[in-house]
Image 1 (cartoon, rainbow, N blue to C red):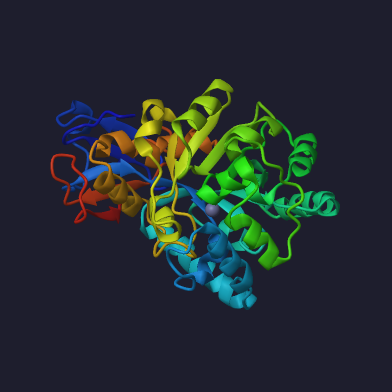
Image 2: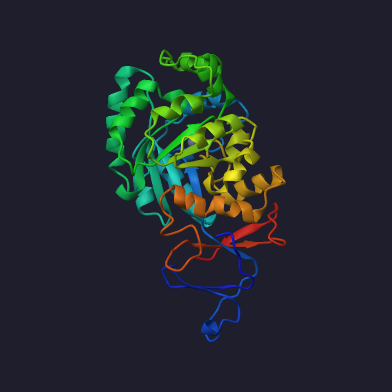
Length: 377
Ligand SMILES: [Zn+2]
């Protein structure tokens, strides 16, 4: 990964499996029938973070409210007729396929998306979220998450803690006892500075949110350090972990995480961060560890589209140090590794079925707003 071929030729079979990758003029392909495209051919994208079951909420929440108010809105408004939710999910799935997305890390609270996923051409890893603030809710919620997980692809599902502000220390402890080593975690991390305020000082917007929603906030104590430095030790050490958002993750937090010697990926969801908090993570703090960066769209409750190419455009627009070749692995192979799918997709490599996406309008491998995409396979 990271290399490109000028005038390269990719051979695929009818099912999309890569049979060969050749340089122009290779004698092995001279006689073969070829389709010629003008553009940059890349593997299908991996959307490392989504909530497809919130697809019916497109355009329903206010922008720029900050996370606690956004969450309150989603919790109050997410209820809808099942057939409307199912239809919106089917549309979102089709939209992601058209947008060149080959695999998705998708968070759920219900089994409603199981059918859409089972019949999709996209490969999903489903993360069943657990959240509980009261002690008596912990075990029933874990049991319920296990029941939900049962509806999804056994090789590509896991249970996960939802977020630091929705899980107490007791929940993390109980959770730790119940998971196997191959269970991948995906946790919303430092999406709002209010989360850090909650963990540092036990104050801020989350206390108002708990009060408004009638939730018990007693499980939180002032810890004099940011959230990730407080909760990470409660998670089992050997499980792969995707930290999602990281909008308010400091250099000190990154150092702390890196010193733990864990298998961690940092997922960036630029459009959703702009939608909810009007702020982007300090991307350049993470960049030295490029292997660990992945990209997500989050849900249609906080994004106008589920389109990884659009997320990449935001990154190169806001961070002029980033270029296309640097972030392409974030959108493809790194995401495949994070979701345990790199044996079948994420790069144009013989034996894989990564999907093929043609980017048109690129200028010397430079990504800009007028670049469009077309799915080839
Ligand atoms: Zn999310």
